[in-house]
Image (cartoon, rainbow, N blue to C red; front, side):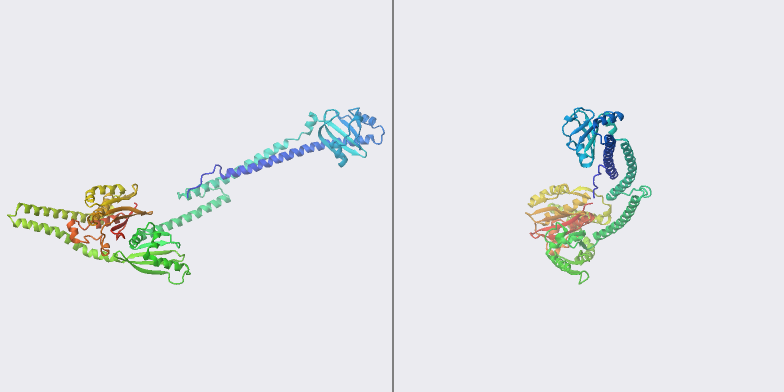
Length: 589
């Protein structure tokens, strides 16, 4: 799994910014609220002072009939700079104003905000309003006393603005507290961030299967998050050790399956491939009339429908009830296969395919090998010996006859040389296949070269070759042995396929380990009883014709051994439309 891109901000920075934003928002709200309260407090304080002045004025005038004289005397005795005093009756008429003598002509004051409040609540003020009579902006405070409303006012000048200004010391106090909390929280989040960052690096290493490079005893802080992180590491290490052990056991199982002498395939309950070895694919293609592009296509083979029916019946049967294993025989392309299916408790299942003719072939091959070598060597030696004996015993042999016998001796000696060479090649394959050098090989170019080499023979027999391999098919192998595989198959098709045919070479499938190749022709094919013996050493379908053509009987045996050295297997079958097809695998290397 690919890790996500690293975020622009780490978790601890995001946490710090989030909390810092809350702190700043709270501080600004607190400052705004406190500032408003301070200002309201100053206004209320000033209003209270003026209300107190109003009360003393009311006490001064009492029941006096001459309010103007009484107030003028009182204001002179208790001067307050720029103070304006106004007396209003309940109808809104101004009956006294200490700054304006023409107050009887003032308009009705019932609609003044402070007067309205005084009538409704007993007292009220207006923070800032310009007087229509004086043109000066005042702070008004009015109080109702019986049938009178006493209003005092101070000019809204610089002195008053300064006195009403809120105390800003609380702002500095709030900023300092916020800064201290920010520093403390930064240290706290930095510790959390260290733990999270190290844990993140660990998870990235774990996801990439990189070596664990975290010192559990020192890397994490001694807090709850550090303890959790160390527990996660301990759990991961145990899981990693278990995974390694399971991986080793899996590799053992895969190796066992790949080198097993039976075809094994394990599938899910939905018939999806879990694990399949090379022989299973090889045998499935031998049983099938068409090359399988994927392993799941095995369930479409008519000869294996019994397995599909058995699996479908088992899906409706509770685990543990009834028989969970079945087997049957398949006779196809000259071979006898035993096919067995085992269904497990989770409804996954295993299919095994065993070639019963294989062991019998091995025993027979060992028994006949020595006889075949002796026989094949004896034939050219006897011919050479016969011709030479005729030459020696007939001194008067005509020149033309003598030349003919010598040419036949030379041809038989060449045949003997090829035979010994092929036997030598097979011996080296058997004895030193682990010492063969492997290198990258371009199969498409190699096969194109072979086609060019045999172009004259192809033209003489009107044979068409289609090289359908991908030009960039990557494979690692021995170039000489790979050449032997395709050259011998090509020579075999040219020699025995007939005329006016086509040869197709293609890679019809690949998986993690193997390429699956098909080398087919549209020639005369081979009788089914010969198919399983084509790769025997010295085996010939038509002995007389083979010797006449000049074959050694070892070409396909060399092909089989070369394929095995490259980690694969090879089989032959007849095409439905006619001709012979070789299906083989080569390891990717």
